[in-house]
Image (cartoon, rainbow, N blue to C red; front, side, top):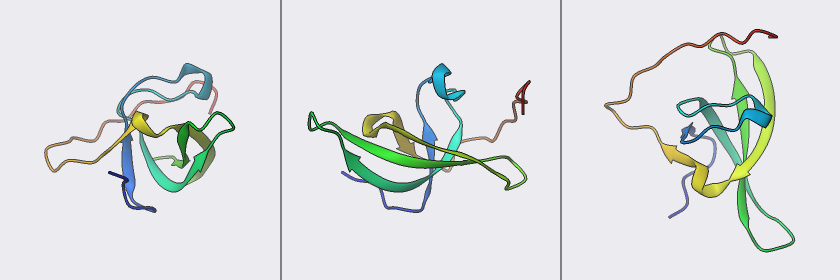
Length: 80
């Protein structure tokens, strides 16, 4: 089942090459398919204060919907 566009989602595993870790929050912006037919999702990343931090494309199975039992956490980037 596809998640709705423009909602906040949770990244469910680490992507060190994109400086993302499990638990980071992103906004689901679009769905894409690569040349091999694998489906991905375009995510917008923001800081906790709402500053735009970037756009990444990740596999669609790397995101999940935010649950009411989820807690927020903060991690500081060294080179931000």
